Image (tube, each protein chain N blue to C red):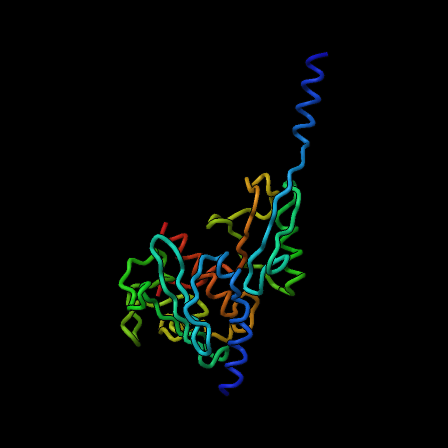
Length: 142
Length: 102
């Protein structure tokens, strides 16, 4: 994908994460600059979600799970499998096993559920993917 | 007489309309807008506000979306009062997460 197009797509979506939206969702935004959207979900057990959005939206974001200090997340993770502690075959690290995550769509267990099935749907922009993750984190880490 | 007055008073109390201030946070923006809340009666069905948000934010398909307030999933077919929502109500509305189990 041409970088200029990916950048334009990223900037269109990232612009939706306004200061008020971040405040209402309890997010601290660390970086909102192509190709990275990096936020902390404020919670008694906070998690930092770093989305690498090169080739957006031809490819879904690659999502890294970090501790609040930016180091790799060591858990605990909420139950249910979306925050998957099992280790991705490509990285060996915990990963996001949810439609809209590059790690999900490239995992051998989900290769039948291709990103093209979800790309461009309402609610599947970068903010929509982030909102889904926030909801799973908050409901699972009560 | 006294009983009738009490009944009328109770009836009036029961019909007292209280407003709630609502914001709907979606992947496509905030309804009614970036800096405000919409005032609606607490007897308003939640889904009607979501429909207005959908129209304003030009969202077309919300069939598998879920609405939550403070992390609690709400029943959008109910009124704000029926779902015990009062005061300032900030509804997060987005797709339900799909996946897991790899």
